[in-house]
Length: 187
Ligand SMILES: [Fe+2]
Image (cartoon, rainbow, N blue to C red; front, side, top):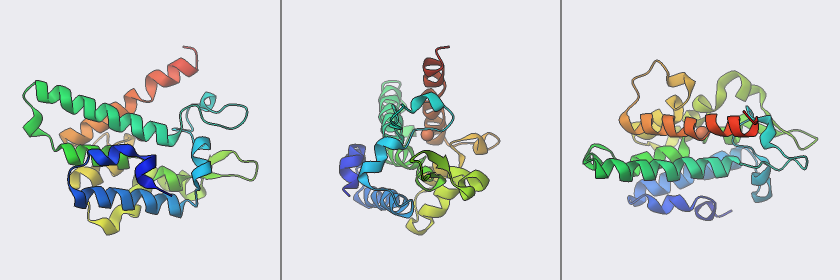
């Protein structure tokens, strides 16, 4: 499986070392989840919007679509911050790496049941993807921004002082959830 084809935004990371670590992290998570390339269209961005799943079990917005959308919107946000004169206050590489990996734990939080439906694993239900993601990447010695993005992008981080890059990822992630939920629920 070509991770770079699945996530073309990897090329936006300038540091070769960080880019390779992000690629290896995604590859490891997908391997641990025992997913094949054909499975990705069935894995939804979230299980909290059941309407995302069509009758043929295909997800209208897949997890891969979601990760790519969050990453693209983080890059757009960075570009806007540059126009505000704040570009040097943010680490662009780490922002992109954090966006690409924020939901890396979902590849092990979810599984396909015998009917082909995507469900939460037993462990996923108990630990959730933020902690599972942090476990997956622990061997890669990723920067603190990236690790904080993985473990605290979601509600787990609501009482944590998120770093600016992680705050962007957290808010963009919500922007890729809440309005979409309203659209699918038809308000
Ligand atoms: Fe997300």
